[in-house]
Image 1: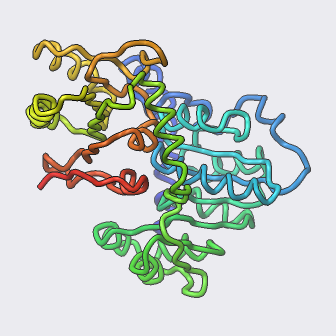
Image 2: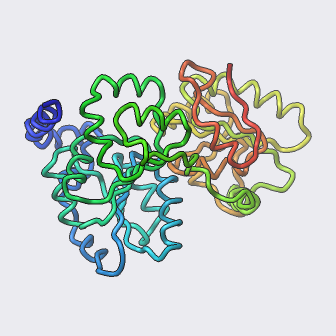
Image 3: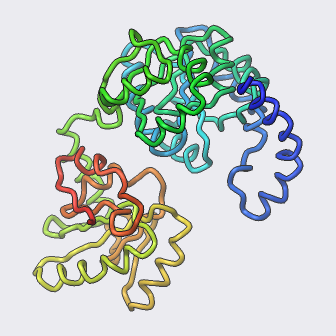
Length: 357
């Protein structure tokens, strides 16, 4: 009953979405970008990505964070001879990052709105053999429609916080219906597995696999570090302080730290600031301008091109690898009441993490 109400509500709201899209785009509403793809009206070139050689894999990832996981899965499957991949994402930024990361190896598309007939339209178009849900993207119509179509379903990098678990438990009947469709549920931690089973996943299909986001070999760090330091035109003696995923107000708190480190060091100290949301770039530029501190955007950096001592990251999808170039790495969201962001992106490179209280 709950699932039927959900799908009826979504279908009923579809005309409102369609009619309001032009105004929303005019006002900068990112949700409505590429509305044709959200309605599963995909461009003709998608047909060229289809062939009868091997399995077709459909991966679904929410946005930028999950794309790294998808990339590791794709690389593993390519090693087994699979070459047809379709990746749907929920955000425009995620799509841009995915297209840059995968190029022609993967067909990247916006995910359809969570309405059964739109999901069926995607299935009819790409005809997948296997559907891989990256992390906990439990969209009811998407999962139920894929299950009914008889497509093999796998959930990878599954995780459930205690808060999410309590929220999902309120709709336990619906969750059991969705989770029973998965042939395999691969979770990050044992407690994640216990929560998925409690919500209805078959216990014999749940496995603990660790975090698939951080499967790259440790020996990748020197090459990644050198690549970024060369791109930033840094000398071997330059020290790099990276503040990643910063929230509003944190740069003001970190500036005295940077200035203190710079005054105590005989070496050049470069501060790289990566705001959590790119919409803050303009405000950050104004902030540093008022402090009479010159800045360079990451997109302006190039080998052999001098840059300022403060660099603002204005590109999505760079931070996880950029940390490898750092000597001091701060995890944003930890000096304000946001709980802090993902320290594993730093720990992955074998580097210490600086974290707020």
